Length: 362
Length: 268
Ligand SMILES: Nc1ncnc2c1ncn2[C@@H]1O[C@H](COP(=O)(O)OP(=O)(O)O)[C@@H](O)[C@H]1O
Ligand SMILES: [Mg+2]
Image (cartoon, rainbow over all chains, first blue to last red; front, side, top):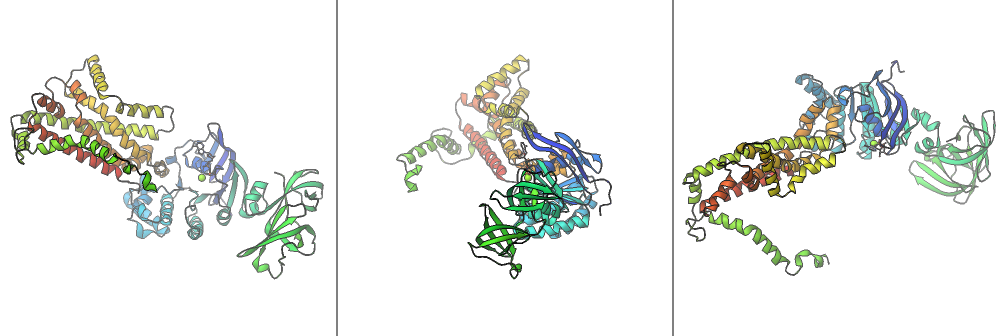
């Protein structure tokens, strides 16, 4: 799919320290041309810091950043063909919407006639042409957001940075903007680097996702990879919902690991690299990959039903494993014909197919 | 229940308030009223008239006052302009120059003169000019006024600037503006209310200044306040009240304007 030989952004061993505090620990990642790339992680993990280093507002303590092969970390922000949609929009309050959108082109020295024409086109792209003469304060939050987007897109940057641009919008508007952003990215072909702490948003929108925590890159991959093959307990827990069970490995043979839970129940699952006999590791089991049944299957755990919670499209069943651990199972409402719902107190088996359980070493 | 602890119902509170207000404003009110007195006496009321205002502009002392007023306005305009420029640059450097180590010290240094007794500043300035062998005259007044106007101009400007988030300039630089262009096209327009307010304040402080001016002015050079003081020494005539009332009027208008301008929020 990706034909370009050079990456849009290449970050090599970037470190950021504020005094004694290290905000980023040697992050390396490559962002491809034309990609919708997302930096995902909890608040305070360093997403904004990384974005500001790419834009040029923070200097890089150690390491290097390349833009299409050219080293840029020493360049001032105005010399980088990269634009930002700021978290609080930062629209210039004393300029009209059209002047705001045309500002970048004007600073690049384009003739005013062309500035107005291209600013008008950018406004059209976000469907705000009729508001060109207004001041930003006369627009709603959602409209201001689109002006900020048009302003950053108008100079046709090589890379667009978006720092949690949707976090201030209400749910409905946010969903609509997610789709619109995705379309704009596809239509313009500009590389987007999108920052969010919302894993659902990241899964919906991104070509690839970098999961970060405490200033470190945890995993890089597309939505499916990071959801289905999380590399560690942090990713497994942060992306979607999961049951994390501490287990001890009894035996590793033929790519399969036999382990036991603290309560004594045993289970075999695919052994991941580096798992050895006697290792104390975690088992990740997604709630939707487990079926509650009266009879045991190939791989089963014994449990007692605690309660069933109706959550619209799904039913969440909370059970206690024989060792006392809490475990959650999600059953889609449309599956009700096949899956049985058990009353609280009922003894049940949690059946799962091979490959559903994942061993995580850290 | 809350009313029980309301300061306003303390016994005697109303009387104290009225007393304070009276002490503050009675002299001003009396001067203003008597400036319209028809009588040449400063104590006997003899009907309303504008004769002392006419006297200020055409009477025997009018040349002296016109000359002093011209000096005052020239000095106030130049001093306020220069002080405002310096204060704007200082505010930009202190508030936007990053976290340099002397930031707090710089702020203290700029605003400290507000706390120094004016007579001390006056004596110091005089000694300074003497030490460097500077002839006293209009220029010494101007230089001294520029110096003491800076903190007055600085306060509204820095207050304004503190309310402007750094992301506006970052957005400008992100959109290919150099540091200078970001300042001119984004920060400066947003700061304008603070700058205007600072200018008006500096202007009025310069126009009204007596102590420092009196120390550093050369022989024969007068500004309005020193001319008024000189005239009063020869006995208070009603035309002094007329001049004072006009000066009061200008001050009130300027301070009101300054307040109105600084209240305008360009970021909304
Ligand atoms: N200018 C700064 N000085 C000191 N620490 C900072 C500064 N900026 C950010 N940090 C710290 O760096 C960490 C990462 O911040 P940030 O990148 O804003 O996180 P995120 O955007 O992921 O929420 C936080 O712990 C934050 O407190
Ligand atoms: Mg952030």
